[in-house]
Each structure stands twice: as structure tokens, then as C-alpha cells.
Length: 206
Image (cartoon, rainbow, N blue to C red; front, side, top):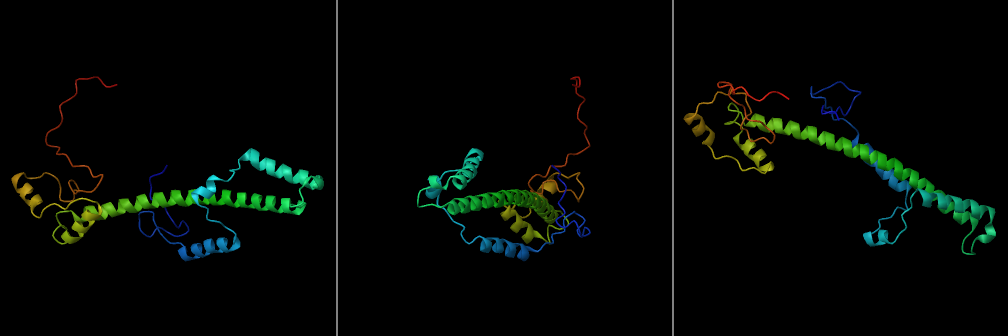
């Protein structure tokens, strides 16, 4: 799966440079969903206990229902007086239609769920970049409160004021000021100093 940011509006030019242009008619979509509910006024909300007592139809059971319609149509005398051929046809037609609608909604839900997951991951990556920016030496004094607030959102305790300054005074850093090493951002990798190269390995390469 691609790790590139998603373009949520491919008909418009990139406005952010990151591939994300979040522009869609949310209210219109919610209205359309409500319209679906209005078109299906008999929708139910079953409890777990109610669902447990119902037959779950697979492919063979669906075929059995449809075959029963043919049998009832051709042999109406086989039906009990409590049911008519039209009753059998109606319930089978509603079931067939609801099954098709459910399949379409399941496919749509998977796309919505996958897209939401991907965009959420992209948004989190952007938020981490913002957080890392508040931890740079240049921005630290100006954005100390914002960095502290974001750190609490990450579930991390903010470092005591002056701890980084004390550490820097004791051990000069070779990292550039723009480095995000040690920023506390989840997933950030510490920068290593190139001053002392690692010793060559004596083991042959596989």
C-alpha cells in the first residue's frame, strides 16, 4: 500500500504541497445518508439477544428462499392459508433488495474505513511534524506552552525547564540546530555523530 499522503480532492490542484486538499461536502453526504434512512423506514435495531435467535442466511439458504418462491408460485395449494403467493413473493423481493443494498454499503464502508485510516495516519504524521517544530532550539522559548500541551496529548510528561540547557552545557552537541533528535516525538530517531566511524566488520557479507 502506498504511504504517500492521500489527495482527498483529485479534481483540484494541490494546495498544501503535501498531497492533501481536504474539500468535500460533508453535510451533503450526511443528508444523503439520512435520505437512505428515510427510504428504508422499516430498518431495525436488534439487540444481541434478538440477533442470536435469528437464522443467518448464507448462499445455500438464499438459494433455498428463491427456490421456495418458484415452488409456491407453481403450487399455490401447497401454501397454508395464513400465506398467499403474493406474500411469499413480497418477502423474497424485499430480502433480495436488502441483500443487494447491504452488499453495496459494506463495500462503501470498507472504502470509507480505509480512507479514514489513511487520512488519520497522514494527519498524525503532520501533527508530529508540528510537535517536533515546537521542540527545536529556535522555537523552544516561544512555543514552550504549546510544546507542553502537545506533550500531554502524546501522554508524555514534559521535561523540566532547563534540563536540555544543562545537558548541552555539560556535553556540547554536534547535531545541527534543525535536528529533531531527542524531541520526544514518537518515532523520531536520535541523530548519531559522524566523528567516530564504526569499526569494520570481520564477518563476511551474506
